[in-house]
Length: 277
Image (cartoon, rainbow, N blue to C red; front, side):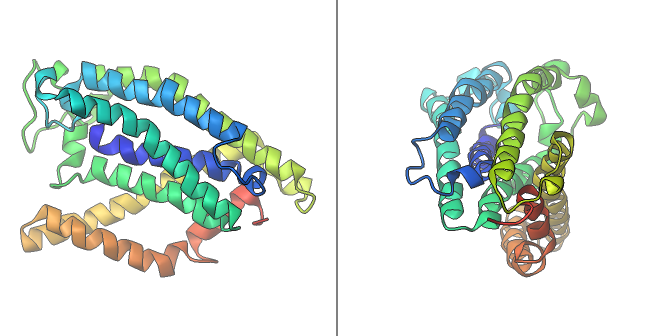
């Protein structure tokens, strides 16, 4: 989605750099290495085109039900959307690389986590508390009837035209995203003489860790923050203001309860590296 992909692209770039952290530790040029080349090719050849395809075919859904048809999309918006799907990933890679160079591996993974948090928060809450309704509505399966607040397809969305398109894209994009991360992490671990071979997770366990730590933790955090935002919105009457209050407070509290050294998310990130180099 237009409102989501800038955060997703950032997370992808940051995640790729963090996964290759051991190899990038001594790389002085962030953009002159095979890990960045792969990241750039992934963003330019798979991620950005998939977003443009969805925007062209399902403009209402891809804009979170803001646009009603292609004619609502100015050309400059489409261009900026396509470009930022690449540039944001490059920025994420660079920011994560900086953390790796400084030996701050937990912070490198946190760049990816933060991007996924905002991505999922927009999908679940949006800017007016109806994000999940907008996500679970495909006008092409509703006779072209446009979305209105309170309407959604629920579980019926999994059989929508949008959903089947996402499944097809996922078959290609999913492995192209996860498999290199697993390979790079294991490559770095096996090359580190300080890591015991028996402590290195096998590929299947590494895939589960990626799913749980990167996606699962971010999504669980979002449900908590979104729930608090919905409750506050009822009290103050402004969904947007509620989100602007809750999200900063969540990260402030999370710094001491979740993200700091020795805290749950820090420990989860440690599993990727066994121990920080």
